Image (cartoon, rainbow, N blue to C red; front, side, top):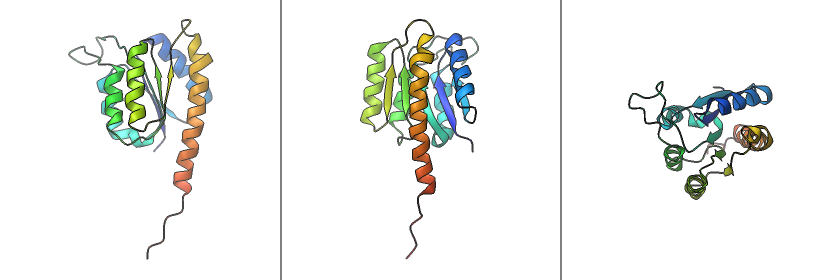
Length: 158
């Protein structure tokens, strides 16, 4: 199964920028973008072991296209789910809601996840200037960890 990058984001402009940069720098990874927390959690339940990076926004707007009840949840919902799971990959929190981002970071870090946080700035400039270099660094670290796991010798049976 192909490794994936999972992003929780509801802003179309941010999504387009992230898609463009990921497609340019990491075309060999599947990119999954979720506008709501329930959609992200449902997908992660079945695919978390194949995710190489997760990026989470906190504040999500209701969308007529998502969920019948219109409640998109928050990034905190996804962070709570991840905190209940064995750490698998790095997580980037990208949110202008600093208080919520700090709470998400604390919960995930306490649960053993590697977490980095970015506060968006200057419309979309932060995607190229801060998010992409951080994502690149974390993907490289995560890919090396996956390679070590795959290449690790299997203990001989007695």
